[in-house]
Length: 144
Length: 144
DNA sequence: TTAATTTCGGATAAATTTGTCCGAAATAAA
DNA sequence: TTTATTTCGGACAAATTTATCCGAAATTAA
Ligand code: FES
Ligand code: FES
Image 1 (cartoon, chains in turn purple, yellow, green, orange):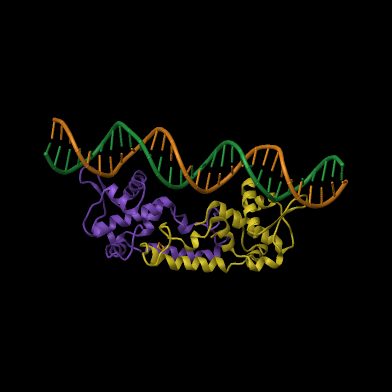
Image 2 (tube, rainbow over the protein chains, first blue to last red; image 1 turned 45 degrees about the vertical axis):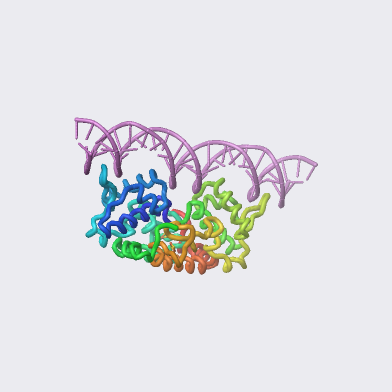
């Protein structure tokens, strides 16, 4: 469904969001530990997310990554997925045809569009504030 | 969503099903041409599908691949996907945790399960007879 | 029996994704 | 100003996925 890179990106974003709700800034190492991911590889992904303005990066001592608390309700999982995996999941053809085309649909088209629509809706309506709250209440986890 | 290998596998199966409805057997080359895939790589995938008894392979002159007409309504897209990509799409965690676990859910779990359920239902109820009919009527296509 | 055709199966190679390493740049604090 | 800390960015490496090649095996037909 998502690439491994993308799952790291989502988990990292959610962890940063969780701490952002508590007005805390987190370092690369803390993130990698919290989400159980390879440190250097995680750094690359965070760079992408920073460039897309999904997270904020601060260099130097006491630096790290953060999200403005006020932004939490405005950022969605869909934005994160799009930034890393692109948007083919949201509008591409299930069978990999160059584009999804209503006029010359692939055999899976009719069944697939409703799934794709639900995916769009779900990921576009899942904002970081909600998710961060769940994490801080211990109702959900980022690793086991 | 699906691996490239899997989309080839699905398309190949659907093409064989389309011809099976007309009581025709097709060769590797015909399949690769019909679905626009690399010949040798397609051969590998067909081998897997044959081992899983989703399709039937016949060696020698006039050989090729086929599906028993009577089997068409009993074979689903889900079987094909499971044979090639495994079943992590159908029961795995959206964020790649070792397993999807209700008791210690990842932050996407609640939203994700309904999508996953719909995916299961859709792919498990899409049988080859229906799809083959659409293809033979020119209502859907396997390449452009 | 021989020849032609077609899939099978193993080795290999290319491409992409995933992951590492390390010096540079920025910044905070001593 | 100097030092320590932290992210940045580029080169490189490993692992996985995608793809090719070719001889072997099976089967049909001459
Ligand atoms: S054409 Fe394949 S999903 Fe729309
Ligand atoms: S625990 Fe992640 S989807 Fe269920």
